[in-house]
Image (cartoon, rainbow, N blue to C red):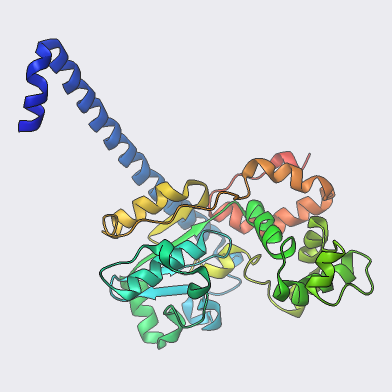
Length: 321
């Protein structure tokens, strides 16, 4: 206050009043912003609660409680016992950076800058502690008492991001395990290139529509569950069976991350890494779907409708006209 008084004295009465009003309005705007964040957080939780209350069977695949969920289905929940945190990670929703944060927390103080942690390191199994590594009784206790959070994203934007990352880039694993089958089944290529190197030299990769055809084919899910990068978000994190304390959105990532770190009393300790610049934007969705027939767009929405509804994302009606 002494510093403020020293600032006000040379300005005279009117100048002092102006400065005081500026600080008052700034404080009020900060307060209103904090209130809006709090309200938004509550609205997201309330929406989830209401929809799960009405359609729990539909969104929990017939499971009535966590007792019906296998250990394998809980593999996306990461635990930090020191700070009492559980994070359910969803691929293509800032999960690498949140894993970096969880890794840094696990190492203890003094905390490292999360960006100093290699992305490859945090994706190595056993570098982070998973909830399903504990006995069932401990799992239930942690889920009851720890702060649980997840981050979600517009479902169609997430699909586009997954396609770009796994099929438009040089990725040996996804080419061998997914792209070759997609090319055979939906791109009329009876003998696709044997290796990802050959495919890239010849400019061969599944189109976005080929990828959508693969997702819509009933035989895809019959053979094995969707790969996590395109598996529905609610199937990865079970939000109708686990009561999450915080639901962040990719679209407001930095703001939500700051709010969450404040809730966890870690805002002054850790800085959330900046997002990648080439994120797939909501505005580009229509361009991506131009090659997808109208009927297939509608089928794809039905396939991911649970994610749209549970997490408050607008149905993209412009895609269905």
